[in-house]
Length: 409
Image 1 (cartoon, helix red, strand yellow):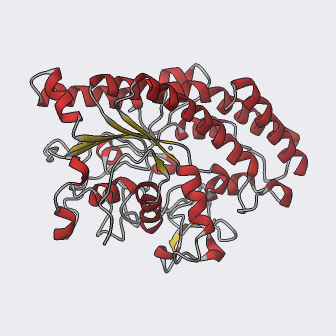
Image 2: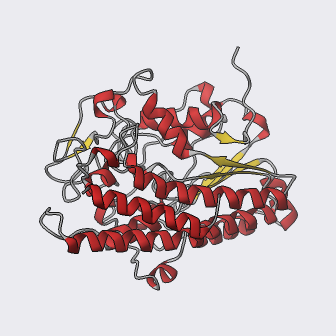
């Protein structure tokens, strides 16, 4: 397997040089989030609303309301998801997500999902849908990539945003005034485009390292790499449209380090120690994630040149996650289970089984989710999302700072 690791690594490096320098529904639960008086305080830094676009890392209930969740997301709309907050809400975690903690830190209510039609959208809207892609289904189909979960791509979310704004304002000028007091989150999105390309070419053997299965994996890698420029272009084009409409503060997050995610690590099941970096993550997969991030940051620099009056922050999910791994012991995570899903099946290093995902028969939940980083092998625990939020918005991993928080006394 060392040969496979080296081959993929060389392929990643070669493509980096070519490209350039540089993720049956039931009724939505009716319980509401319990916020303390402090969480209902005066908004921070004049931000009165958040508008969020994305996928399962920030969906607060849209896929649940769309219905028909299947595959990896089949069980995310029921228990044990939401176990830390009183029940499943459509969030892909045991509790709250980064977007929830960010809203709390800004003194705003939690964002309601766009499809909650009778909800209060005074302080923003969440358009994110679990399983959503940056590219639309038709564009991915031309590459042989199927979208299994939702057709609510980034372009669809942007149109929903425009429809919402047009129906809740009287003029483009009023939209600009509203956006001038808002924080706009453009992602994370794009990870699912790559996930589906990899998944379409996953090994189908009995676990043996056959040449045929290696060929399938290599095909998935090449197809995912080919998507990167278009995925990044979709994200930056959406950001450009939002800036043209009047957005003045945007956060555009990058990809997580895929080589540290239990679902990916389990799928590769690499036994050669040379394939892993100093953090215990698969180096080749992390290099792929960085390829996306490098191109995204290049696109963000171009946006900053075009819109010098706006604050356009890059949310460095990659290195915030790496920092969380490195500081795991200091922040109370179980250092012996950093790549092990809290909720899952199969045991071993990852406790991840694609056929027995969290919530499925045979899956179980760990005794102390607050000591784990990974919730279900794909998504993080509420505790990990809190740590990530702190790193991004209070410790400089989103830069330049999109929000000036008061200094603690």
